[in-house]
Length: 144
Image 1 (tube, rainbow, N blue to C red):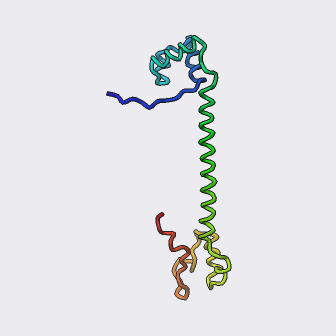
Image 2 (cartoon, rainbow, N blue to C red):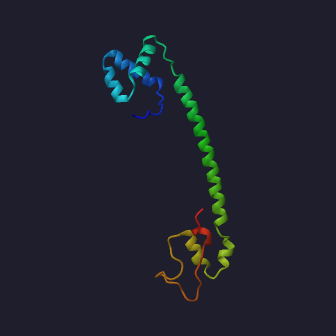
């Protein structure tokens, strides 16, 4: 036995277009059923409203627009909050410029911070014996 599909909401404009196409003879009812996956009874209800000229002239679209506007506002608030959170984390993880310049490897460390792809140390990537390994962020390997 096939499972029932979830309910779909159709705009008034779509309903009017389907009814106009059927009533004008451009598209048979069976073709509309197949093309848009609509039941015969639903099309019949729409046609009855269309024939009596009782379609709401945009009430569905306005409610949907208000719902979308509210969702958009909530998402924009979330983006703002996440942006502030990201900036705070970046500030916390960024080392103090004075502390970096006081270190013996300060210029190389500053270059590494500016370009994370650049290797600190020798050109061949091997660790220099007279300098210890530079560990920029020991907690970066942790998974949140």
